[in-house]
Length: 214
Image (cartoon, helix red, strand yellow):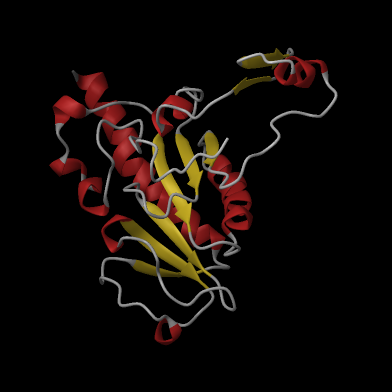
């Protein structure tokens, strides 16, 4: 199974993907307000350090009171279960889907591509924030990782960029970015988390307060 996130309908939980310009609560269309999780991508070229950054961001955001879920696109096929387990044997026998649950967690495996990313996001109704790994060409608001020795230029649409997290100096970046795109130290994870948290406050909490006032 190969899923290209740029071909999958990239609708977030919001009725429309949220760019930097739409982060201003004053400009939001109240008829489209939806209290679902805020979705932000951590993007970059292969081996740029996206997974490492996400694993460092999650505990910081959790410490700020957010329930964080993640969605990752795998450019190749993958084994979703432990080989030899009962559920793996069910899948290999031809089941169109399998589910395993215990008192503490549950897992569902669907065969075939999802209809869209929103279908996956609906698995996490309790989440305040969903971090997407990859999705560099999607319209989701994003943090782009540019790491020395791996890349030197931005590959994302600047219209959806919140910030670039890099260990390069601004003069070393081979990209001309809008002034509104912040250049952050890749190792200053607290500050990167702060940018994400600020977006969540402006979008997630504001949408909830609007609904509570309706």
